[in-house]
Image (cartoon, rainbow, N blue to C red; front, side, top):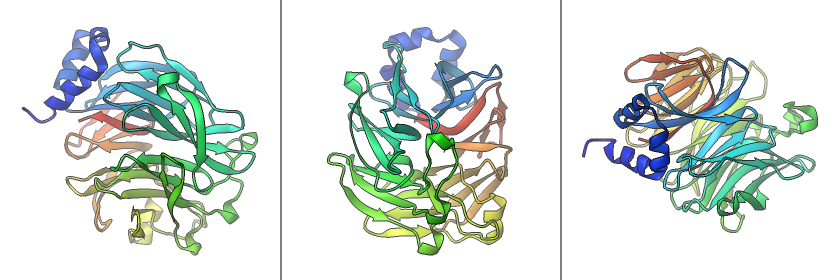
Length: 366
């Protein structure tokens, strides 16, 4: 069977007949031919927001309107469930079924909580875990939602720190890796950062079944303003992590590294000029375990880098205005920008659409 064909059939089977019937002939042909399917939030030229499923060449398969700006998207391929997280400090998120068999479900954050923009499904798709802020107590929590009960919120547990952002499920299906950025926020103050002098970022490994913190890893004390924000699985039992520096612009700490439970964290050593080029900010990260490469993006620095996953050394650099979304492609990586560009690191092709892609790009199948 040709590479990618089995994945496309799996995607179509999960999506169901209703989804396939909703496609135009051109869309159906594109879907049949594309090696990968992606999801991303977007803004349009009329001031509206939504989420889209798209092919690797930028063809939009379907749209999901949103009441406000979305951030990341979680998908569970076997069931066709998907969840668009509100951008912090948003309190409304949207769940939808990619098959179109079920109506969209608007999910409200619990009182005293707001979404931080990321989350993940349990392996069986019955539960959704979302990073959230208990803002009156300045504490990070992981909200638990029962998918089978219409995404009813059934509980929460501590994230192990302040400002949880990205999270992912490790290959054991039980351990959550949670990036606690360490930044205190409160909706009364918008997106203002309230504790930069006392930040304490961490990477926590948490048992999703009982909520216990298995291990908390932290950077050196002199790097306490290096906010750990985004994660990518390394294909084994570890994660790559990406940071945003909130300290002096004259300091140039590395912004990316690797962590393994029980073995600690390791920052990739970079020359100061590289951190300066990225404007001290990584917006997203993706990994390709087969090739041993990692890609990072900086919308502030208008740069995307492909790194050696073992050493952190730079393999390729690309200048892309307002680039942030990054995902593994059928070959190499696919990047998206807030200017509507999709860029392949292998072909160098750039496709431009009328939608302004948001911060994250998720590969659903490929």
